[in-house]
Length: 535
Ligand SMILES: [Zn+2]
View 1 (cartoon, rainbow, N blue to C red):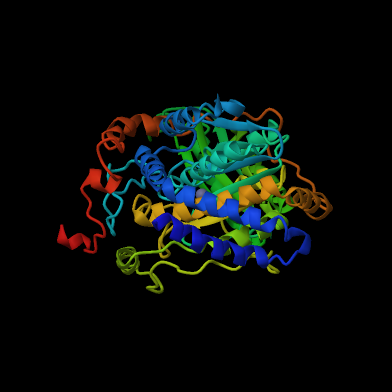
View 2 (view 1 turned 30 degrees about the vertical axis):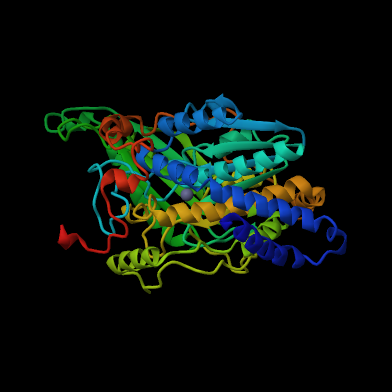
């Protein structure tokens, strides 16, 4: 009985969306499309338990870039059991994988990131700082939720395709090492998107949103410089030494002076990855790792060339030698207009999750603890379809940019997190294994499933997506990747950190056979509305 009510509500919601398109030749196909979307939404609802288990499991694995092996095993085992064929370790990335089901056109590829953030281990559902494993990585961005969106949608649409004998191919792929923008440019370089008609990408947010054209934010080159000099006794005969660490420090000073004279839209930041061994040995080797971000590809290249000269200047001043290694790359993102418009209509039909009073109370307590500008609770309205900004705005990057220049692509931002958090921080993990994350992922899966149905059943959409890609997006700008044909992926990154923490984290892996939710396993009541003082 409940299901029939839900279907009826769904039909009303979806017919709003379709009518808004106002296309007379679509009128005949519209009721069938709407019916399939309503069915897919109902199937997504039926898979809520699976969605929650994926969200909670990936949260508990807490894996950093290039080391997403537990996530890989868990997700590929699941997809293989559901009939997908699996390719492991694609593009020279051992933790990557590619899952494919179906045959023929269109080929729809669903992507989402899976990696976490260093030192952001956090007990979920506790609205204040409480590490699960002190010092360990965690999901301080919320990348544990996107594969749940995609896989839930893929399984719902696959069931419909099987039942109705619909042609088409579904690909599910992971953004491994997104936090280091270390994989997608390599996938693109290796032709992983050849023959794919459209990419639907999903990313966690506190809102439901889709955009077209150039996205807000930057692209970047991530590069590590290594200087080599001469060691010597730092007190006995320091004049014999040539310090690689001096070069690192001079490079930093040089770049920081130069930053005053760069366009304000740039963002650049660095860490010293090797500062030498001990003070009484002049460091013969030292390394620093830079992110060079800008709004356009040309400006990124220009600033990278400036950084290179600063590095060479530092080497000259210290009589050391310098070499560099590309660690990551992200092209400025450009999203597809026709697909974004179709997705937006589906977002309007699906709407925001039906938050409970408990969810809202939890969000407000979290926002108070985080000293958020406004205590607004969880959002209840979707965002308007976002067109390109007239004035570009700086900010973060995502290597989905490289994908977006290879094939028509959009990113769905789905509402699994709470506004008021700090990015790349333990506060971004707090909601990510709670009902807020689960409901946001279910809503996102409905939008993805409906947009897959549009792509499967409306050949005009695929056609117009490619027309936009050819005649608008790439008419005056072409994709010239930041990585070369032989830059290897930086798969050695994070090996040591994961080796340090994995055994301890393993004690907290979510066991869905014993516990309904991860919160239950950890003994966290929901909603917990008290502060740290109550402990
Ligand atoms: Zn992200």
